[in-house]
Length: 234
Image (tube, rainbow, N blue to C red; front, side, top):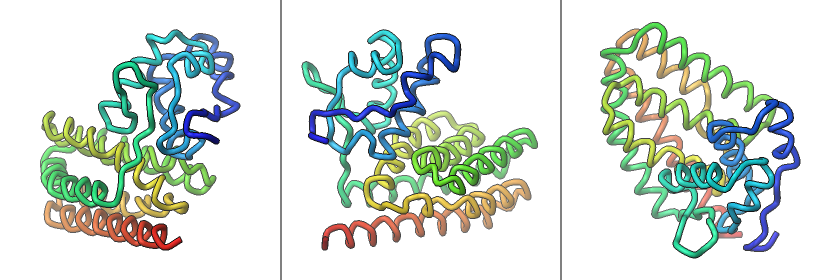
């Protein structure tokens, strides 16, 4: 696949047939993000609104809204008069992003411990179950995306909109870095580690939750950097 070619997932055009209507932004976003994470759309590749619109059976305006969301999350690069391009972060960017996440998510998990409701805890556990199922089915893209959504949902539970918005600019990009740096990315944000964090939040164990989150992000950083080192020697 060349830098200017887009390899479409064969099930994308069937989405509107399954749904019985034209798919919405919320329908298209996870499918397109999964394709990027699974590198069916390769790093640095470019593509057009028209091409995506044809695959999904929707107008350019709908695709434009999906790309705008991915651009806000730094997953896709949009420039005037140029085709949209998948971002390709390097090791230095990965390190900086994880440093920012570590500082932010320590506060997030403390706030979540203080005010999480039973319903929110249940939602987190349902999300972890979906993540685990994708890992067991070797559905790499959805597993990475759901792993990131766990952190975003935890941030929403914290009740601090600026923190949640900040993480929304970091977590999807981290998912892209995981997908690009290491073939076995599904092992990184292990569902077991997420489950342990939820247990601590449910018990309102702030210190325990902070320790588990720190270890979780430390594991992620260590594996990403070691994966990059292996990649650089190939």
